[in-house]
Image (cartoon, rainbow, N blue to C red; front, top):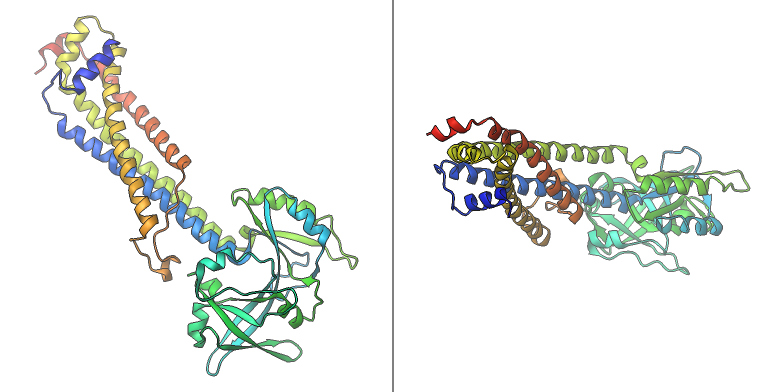
Length: 414
């Protein structure tokens, strides 16, 4: 065993005692690293969880990518495009695209006996992916859509149901304003709650054939296609590939197509979510600084506590670098102990919160009912690697103090 490792081990096990001034300081340094690691893990887990939950809610209402008419129409009164089986096959072959579904929209008003609410009727087909809505359905069930029969059912949000005093099974009259007012009676088959008032109070889900009839469209005319992708991080790249495909398709009437990603349709929300990354980075930076200064204090006390030992060892001919390594090893052991318990406590807290959701939130302010947790092993490893590198770099400076100690003065040091 090299001398520096032997000396560090003897100090750590109590074989070489000092003035025992560092005990409380070292404990504070370990506690600081534990607390810092716990806070960093929780910050990353809740930040990533919040981003994922809000993102999935937005995507559940609007998909990752939409293919629509190239008319720059920003309203819900859309110009139709023709269904194209060739285009659908080409879109399905785009790397990253997992699912394709049709949609059509029509703005209108739901009116009950004493209340009314402006909404957007969003028609979906039999191929619609109901996985998101199944997670937010509170009463009733999703729509059952058959190819040979038009469904008269609708899904409404809990906000609309409370405003209009509707429940599952009730009739919901809707009115649509064109050259003349058109009325339709729908039946409430399900009530959902995404905790996003802006979307909950806007969209009503129905059979796409209802919207086609209201818009006087043929069976093969739709507002566009919605594409679900495998990775949100690659949405811009996938969107670019989809744009290349649709740009080559022009209808006989001259209608061109364009694409838009969910980031382009909801820029305010995703811009707000991106700010969370900056907040998390600032928190992690501050915590590493505080933990690093705690470690610097602990290392300086360790060095001062064993000044006599350093002087004796220097007098015996040990060079400065092996002596510095002794204290760097001691500081590393302290840091690893703090990181171990910090990871254990932080990960345990995250598991308990994701399993039981004991910390609640006000949905009116946070759009979620419990604190969300999402953590990957890659992020945990990066946190630990970053903390170890930062602490080691901060320890390197104070260890130079060993080189400045004179053997003669150190041996006399009291």
